[in-house]
Image (cartoon, rainbow, N blue to C red):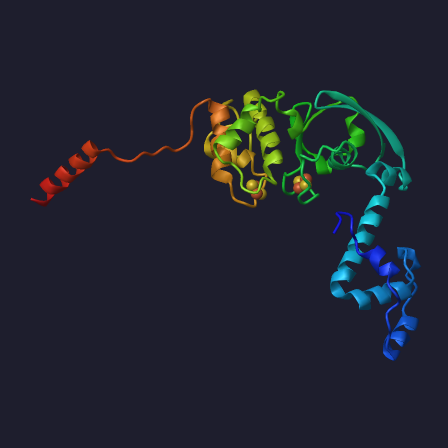
Amino acid sequence: MSDDFDGTDELDRAAPPELTADEEALLNEMPTLTDVGQSRRTFLGQTIAGGLGMFALDLLALERSLAALAPSPEAVYAASAAENVVRVAFNVNGVTRTLDLDSRVVLLDALRERLRLTGSKKGCDQGQCGACTVLVDGRRVLSCLTLAATLDGREVTTIEGLANGDQLHPMQAAFIKYDAFQCGYCTPGQICSAVGMLEEARRGDVSHVTEDVAVTTTQLTDDQVRERMSGNICRCGAYPGIVAAIQEVHSGRQTAQTWRFVDEQQLARVRTEDANEAV
Ligand code: FES
Ligand code: FES
């Protein structure tokens, strides 16, 4: 069987199958299928003659044809009823991009649908999960709630723009080191948010759990990291790794809990102590 075999040629050449009276009646009641490129007689005949396997092959061929006809996102956008189109020129990951956008388009959709930067994720699409977090002029924003039209002349950094070539951003490397993700869906937003959050801490911005707002401290406790990152939800519950990764970048110190097996000397000492206590 050749690679491009889809079963339809062979069936088209075959003699029309014998139909029962019931099948003939059904054939005449069925709606016309000319919009999918086949007559209803051919369609039903193939279905009966070929059985379910051939039917599946036929649908597969049809699906391939329709997929080939599918327009690009740009064509869909151009054909859609865009209203109040505005021209937005902004810098995305170091490159100036100019887009003609419907004034209602949010940054997340502009990034994903127009610029094909799909690292920023759409979770809730209503400002609740943080999966869409990106940096605008170095500050973290929820791109699902940010109108792209407000960003003319601004600088946007997404997860794709954090690394320096092959060199990961320290926060990206720390997330990998601390296993700070499971499915990874929230991770781009977590990393962008963490980068923006540490910049806030460096500036001395207070947060909801800052005990004394008169005292400027730039050193965050784990609780402060948790509170400041509370807008980024992780459904996999990778929070311990996320906090550890952020704290390592924040403090520059190794924050992972470490453990090792006891050696023979330590074991002997413990046994001796136990034996002495028992006497
Ligand atoms: S997708 Fe933006 S906050 Fe959830
Ligand atoms: S790693 Fe799966 S949602 Fe966070």
